[in-house]
Image 1 (cartoon, helix red, strand yellow):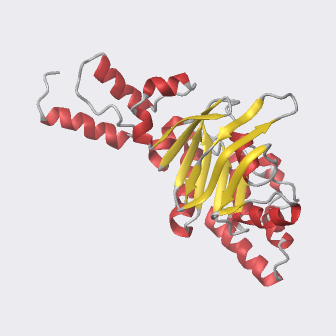
Image 2 (spheres, one colour):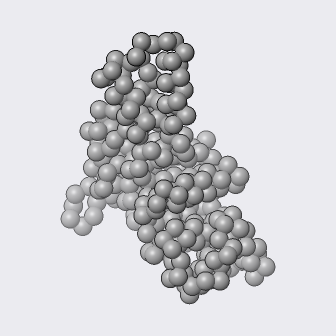
Length: 283
């Protein structure tokens, strides 16, 4: 079952060029879906149309099978169910302390004080920032701010969390930490995760499905394995293969080795090479 679905979604900014051009997509419940594309592909615009920050020019958005209304009073429930984490956490954090910032959404729901405190403590624990909870937000590192921003969305107990370039600005350890956190949220809480990224190496590790966007249109979709079997199409959309998949492509094309060209992770690449060795392929 899909948690959210769009049909022929269109949106243009003031200059008139379509930012979304008949976008029809669906995100299955409990899964992690990637929206891939280069800068200006339409990923961020799509997300802002999904939770009502922007209103589509035409087309429809369905949440849990019900068409979204963009009236102000109806959007409150939409935004409770759909949380967005911006690429730059500085655009999201504004309170004096981490704890106060995390509590903002729950307080605005009008929840009892005890319930707000329960949700805040749970969000702090789930994101691993207990030692940071009383610090001023400006004193956090970039990666810590990302976790605080995620906690501020978790406190709303959403069904879907959308993250715009969640790994941007992070070192390799930070990338692993944030993606591991999102995977944990997905598995333990049943929250649907959608990420916009052009960092291809995380896709086969964490994502169940992916859409490719270019110039406001969906140009390609499939499982990571299906996408990586179309390297030329990815390149036409300003994307690359994951490094391991690229290695498999080179081994197949240049060295004429019968490897699995869709192998895209270290473990998959290792299995592909071991398969060759077991067959005593004449290297």
